[in-house]
Length: 364
Image 1 (cartoon, rainbow, N blue to C red):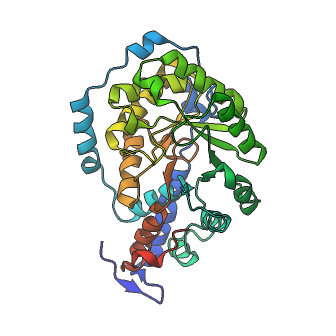
Image 2: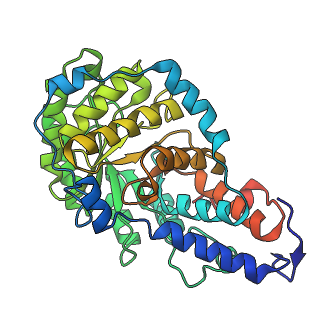
Image 3: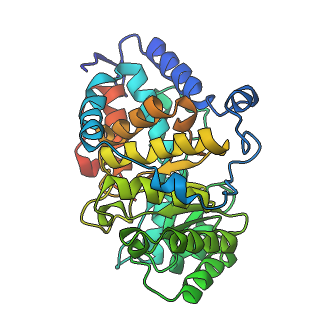
């Protein structure tokens, strides 16, 4: 999109109209939380008052009944980004919403307290003030959905985010492989909660999925849920290790039956992370679980999502398969770090008509 510039910051000609339009579209996307009426229509038991999923008893018949048509899923994944596109003001609004759904993450072996504090500062102010003002959103409080760190840095993140209402998510249960003894994994959850984490991203034992030991997987996730208490629990399936989409679908069902509030694709450490076929499989499991139980579960793709285009592809999946309610941070998160810089870069282009170099924007 080419924008004629006008003024020092480079607002498009007719800038007031564009700013007003972006503001209205962001507002429209932000008021799509599940209403009481929608909850009644869908018989949702955990909305709108709470989005915690209490789980249900393990239903092995339902798990065994999960089937995935690989060619159909791949075809749908290939055509979805082409079938739905958004342009101009709507694209800017979708990118602002994507930004608000990011779990801004640092999970590196060389993480330091200083890096985590910088990450938190970026989470509080993810958009440069001049860009936010040019979008007509100067009066809106825009933050990322959460900050996600190792347990070692939970207390640092909690302190840095004090007063911001941004939740701190801790990866836990021997992330990323999950090979520690169960007692150690549960103690890690308790330690992160004690340090102030309000969201816990747990990892499953992939062996349970690969061997079809669904009872063991159910018991494991249920134990994690009990340890999390009132904290929001996201269950990482490690889909790149699960070999087939059928395994992904069945693992999704078992994780939700055991009480997962979110199901998450990947740790970001697997050879293959979040993909659209995996996302389709998981969100269709979420939809079927909702239809069967009335309980709402969120979705978090993570790993390898680094561009605005990538983020919007996953937003399209949520919109097409689950509806507009699932575009909110309460039900949709994107685990990422460098994605934020590209979204900010695209929004700067929208208001100025010029692309900044990638390193022009802070990557936290």
